[in-house]
Length: 115
Image (cartoon, rainbow, N blue to C red):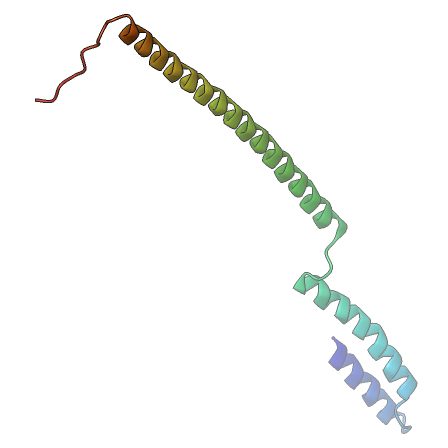
């Protein structure tokens, strides 16, 4: 796109018999160069269209919400496990206390024996 136009401008300047107009050549190069740079930046992904950015932001927000829900669910699970562990510890202590009380009252529990 840029090279054929540049060649055409130079050919027209040569046909008229004058020297090529450097101002026109630089002007066209500047116009097409800027457009070419923008197109290259779009292709590479340095600049993105607004609708693409809006889609990316919406996706980011949905992932953030999913992460926060999952984090809250894991926190609830950890709290429930801590309560269950505490209940288990209380049950073990109650069993030890009951065993000591029975032993002090003269009852000796039979322990399972190995064969």
